[in-house]
Length: 367
Image (cartoon, rainbow, N blue to C red; front, side, top):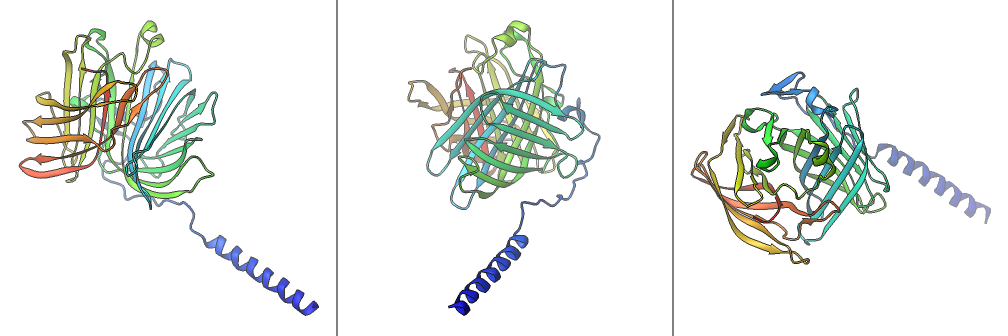
């Protein structure tokens, strides 16, 4: 009996030691620094955008946003989504908008939260903490070198940690840092830049840390805007006061486009803009394009939203049909609702058949 007990204890001790060795050698979530491109160095300038100064929070602006759109592949499904942070006022008031869609099942989960937003310039780190929630978001620049980022989200809705490795230098619309953001009558332009193609890799857990953690790879698009509103405009700020259509497109030939239209209150077009980035990062801009509505989707609330379009651009000779991957991607919040989600597209670019690797549309208002 004693020999048997001794054998069991010896076996358990040996097993525990073996497991401890296995644990020590298990791979951790570590990232090696990507090979830097020629433009990935500080200082970096594109038009009137300057890095690292314009990466962080602009204290002089009373409205600022950072938005990441992404498409991620797990071992069981594809997910698309966006995470947007707003800074309201020149203090630390912040908003979080988070949406995730399972492309295969069509299920969508979303979160809106108010909180505090701060920026640590020494560590290139933007942080949001929910006021009445457990949400914590960190966007860290200079993560593995200049113009690389890490996006970390810890929320009851989802937990993820993504490394965002830029494949192209930042684009600016019209080669400066201004883009018409609000309706013409407001005569407001926003400072704007975007990283139009990023490799995304890391981990994702839907439902928070207690749920299954997936290793993910995919693509993302990160943009940053800042501007000043009057006190009254800021007090009345919501997501639907400015009707507009905005699109981010990543093609299968390593080119990208960002374009949009803003509308007057009577439905007429106030401004339109189209920026195209070729394989090498060179930009082309035009306002000459046609966006034809093809189909609408009716939300359970009865709200109708145009979700399918035909885009025609004379230069760079682009014709493409844009359709949602999942129709039910309406984001609802106390500050209004809008449609934002992943889209697919097929057509021709410069005379050759092409499709989208990843696309996003944001539709605000009915036009």
